[in-house]
Image (cartoon, rainbow, N blue to C red; front, side, top):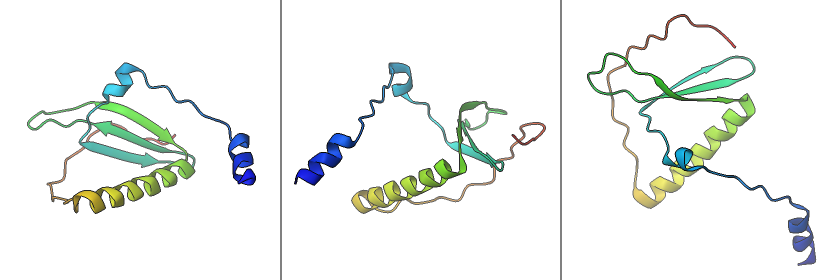
Amino acid sequence: MSEEKDKKSNQKQLNIELDEATAQGTYSNLAIINHSASEFVVDFVNIMPGAPKSKVKSRIILTPQHAKRLLKALGDNIHRFEKAHGEIKDYDKPPIPLNFGPTGQA
């Protein structure tokens, strides 16, 4: 028991703050993922039916290692969600034509 107590006392606590605006969140129904040798870029978009264009609402840039950890964390959470609430059905949707102008690498 003292070993466990020693491990806990050696761990540093991380306090994460969440301001009100961020806590409200941003709705997204499309994620566009690009990558280079050193980073993954995930753009979150809210596409509205019938709208001719839309803007990126949020962009998250990750290292390849963090992208892989995110993939695992999402997979674990989806598994737990489906265990509690049933299978998430994936509906086929027609492809959305995307035009972001010139492409490049970071």
